[in-house]
Image 1 (cartoon, one colour):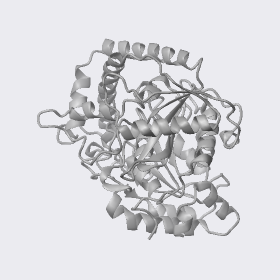
Image 2 (cartoon, one colour):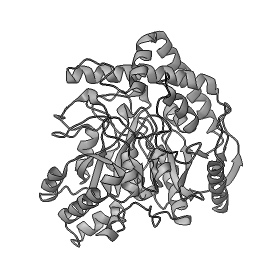
Image 3 (tube, rainbow, N blue to C red):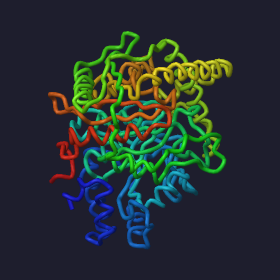
Length: 476
């Protein structure tokens, strides 16, 4: 079963379909791996083992992943009867009384949920170190972050607890842990997957849900199973011309790929991250694509101020939302210092500041869209440095918002795609001299996951990553 653990979800589902393995066997083996590895990694914070065994022993959906183990991020994904904490003591012992629409679709796809994965409080930091549950450790180096906010899911997939796991992304939260943990992470186009029934949009459209996976094809099949508008959605992504799985292995053609290693605003980029992008650019050129070093002109100061306004206002709304649902009053002892500081800052922001910030970001989106008239894909580092040590985002004495400043220099490349709504992916093509993964970040046109899936498959075939196994993993 340890050999099966490193198969992707599509291959595991095929074993179930051919009756070479039973779903309960896959589930029990995954539970054993979680119990063996989790004391070290702390990736899973809410086990749902009995529910998983119940589902695995009953009639299965005929979906593409029938019988395959899966994990939900403990943020934005409600599963009826299971605790939801969102990394915060504010929620107390809250238990969901319904499934979110994304979970409904995951169940329909045949996935069997084994538990919830760790996340920073309300997903606010690019590292997974909540006070409530403690830090998630990177399978490649237990002293380093697994990234955030989907860090528990990234660590679980990298260590082969499960072949794929849920994540969501409001500023890089799928792509950051994908880079830190050496797995594939796609952020879809805005509104490609649903947030309902409780939310129509999150962080004014910046947040989108999908997954971290071991293979490109799993990401494509899963997106086929979960994408599409829900009843009452205020808007939705342009429908694809054909199923995403049909893009896997399709000829991407001769792509015009722009690349940059410059983060702008004087933000330093680690030499390993520069090397990863130049290596990816050279690989793309070898594959026959037209590669040129250029990037859109971005007003980084305007982006920073607008995003800070949006984060502060959205954090205040998020805290008040859960306080209302749980019947609790937000207090400093129920929230981490960073969250409490953002909450207070949001209460001091004017509504006009928030709306003006949204207008500024929407204007920026038009500028980036014009850049893609001449380029099919934009390549950047996923992050400005390899996975840093745990504790790097802790508040400084007298400065609870230190994490905001630290985040800005750690992840200068990913938020732009949440602002514009464009699809983007972190691809694990490079490991540095310390044996740490360093992702390459590819951005596509709005609504054009198809091109990214075609290119990702080509890269996966040219530079396979599936056989790379971290020191902390299912291998005994």
